[in-house]
Length: 503
Image 1 (spheres, rainbow, N blue to C red):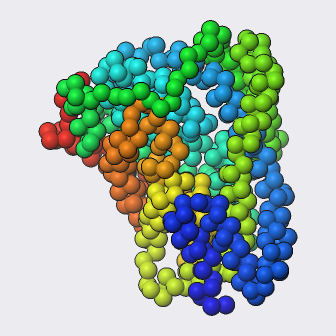
Image 2 (spheres, rainbow, N blue to C red):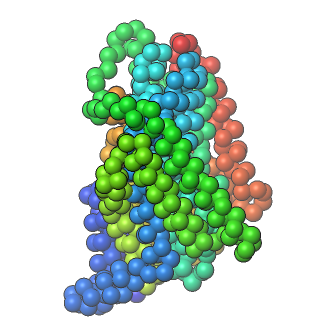
Image 3 (cartoon, one colour):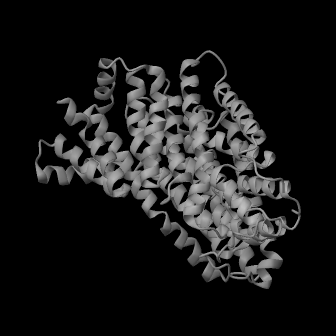
């Protein structure tokens, strides 16, 4: 097959994603074009193949398990968000914060604690901490930055939530397309320390909070606030007051819901490990389905018992949450289908041959994957869409070039996270600015220097990881970059033209 035809569907997907910013449309168009090539340009055969040998083939086995698990998790998360019990829990916790350093670190650790939802993280923490930031004269832009930086960068690191199920499904399918039986959970563990961007982002937030560091427009915003020149308008999200029952029992319901979830997970994982000696993808999916289902039942019962939500309203919220995940499921199914198309076209082998002909240095591949993913996610505002577009290409490419697949997968995940945090059209970016009560573009502009610094260290971190592959522990690259990032921020905090006045 002609080399151009082998890479044409993947190029089409990337170009459409950049130009239209519609991931589902881009993936479906690429899948259609791929089947059009494979069926010798026959329209009827192409239309039949899209569903018969494409989409329908993805709705079975482990793929079906992943879809069910993600749907249940989505319903549970939306139930907690709709009932406002997480907001009540955060309100109780925030009363203990009364100093500048503590409020920033409390926001940081609260963002890590609310690890099971990225958008919920933004909606919960913004309204809770905003009055405290105003009282302590800390610009809301700093709040929006911390909230945004602890949403998706935390979620992508957790294997027992929808983010983990989604990425494990993509990686497992990408390996399977190359004839490699790789358990999704094992693949996730191998990639974890190579998710440099989210790990460095969290480390960077911690350093910025401890060093009281303000860069660029963030420094200007802080100065303007202290001088009385910055006045915030009301947030576009109206914070409805919590009811008496929500204030009184919301924290208790949250503890019951999450306690049930984690206790069930711990018990079931212990039972399975004692029986089989380890965990694999199917086992984890069974445990997740059981744990989230039981936690949902307990939550619905508690909401009814404390007269926060009726049984009918709780059920409606749960099923509404299940429905909200449908676009993500469409992306996932199309990504799986796209992976099969690329295998049939030998896209990975073709790209690998082209790179070898160009004498492309293998130690640069992971960094370039990160760069492409960062640009794509910045343009589309979608991390999950970027994962779906890049991961099916990354695995066969890395295998063909005999380069570490986990490092390249970590680069793909890191690139997707960059745009999720920084893109003006990313949902978490929008929600972080709105819930923190700042102008959307003000949040984008004040956050970008921090994200760009992290991206720079991430780029060189992947070069280091590629050069040192197999020569040391897998955590060495991220530990090294974290140390250098901390020293860099410490140096900036001493530079008088960048550091703001002490507050």
